[in-house]
Image (cartoon, rainbow, N blue to C red; front, side, top):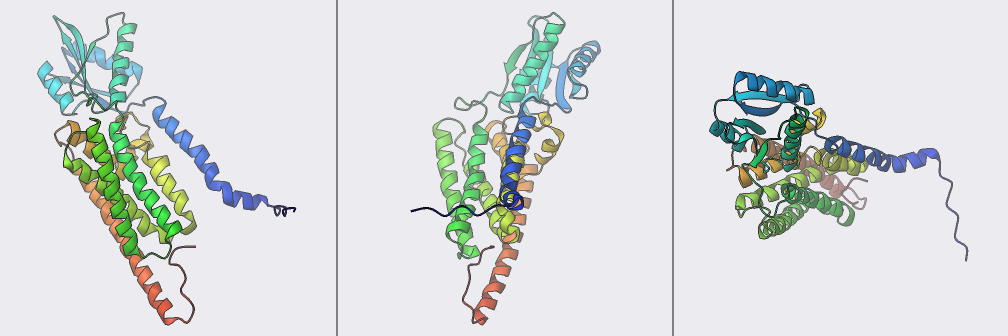
Length: 339
């Protein structure tokens, strides 16, 4: 029995079907490689303890590595410099110790990739000046189970739980009401956050601090709520917009592995506003830095929650109006999802 031949396909039809895979295939590797192929420092704060001449020399050498990439500041003592690193006021501190030689203080918990990069920068400077590289001292080490990417792989699955839940609801439960979808999003967020949290603490990737569980759940619900609210308006553009928002822009700008000061300019700005980056900042601060500097990212996450609530409210009002119209119409009800 012969099978019917495929109907002829025009170039316009092909373009209408494959435009997003083509965009995704181009944009995703480009943005990821642009973000991670090499650090691009922008006013990275570096402390130097020493004389004015020593500070000027370090400034000149760092500017030789990348003009405008580093903001060098002089601090009065080694203890002050160490405190500045521990408090993330500076990314590293360079200290000349008469009896021990030069030392470089870093905090790998703030970003292992960034600490390694700064260590390499000072080693390069030492090689060019034919001196011994400074001894690197890690003042805030990572937990034993974290190789430097643990926070990202704790937070990012929460984003994907929200995304996948909404995608499945749109495909498999198109007639579900907004309320049911929100309950599903919250339920899956609770399951995902509990699993991620218990796994992370059992592997010693994160400490046993319940606020991390709450943050993971909150992030998943925010993402899911945003997608539930915007799905009726995005219609056939839902998947392209979501994948661009979550993967192409959200992941590289998260700042989970490389601090924002080493990201390209556009991604550095996105790191200041996108929800995944804010959750990463909160998790890192609670885990390693005693919860300091979490006010701003918390407020930004709350702003995203407010946007999600507004979008859900508009979608719910639209759904209610549509149900009212359908109840008065003799025509059979149709699914309440965008076609």
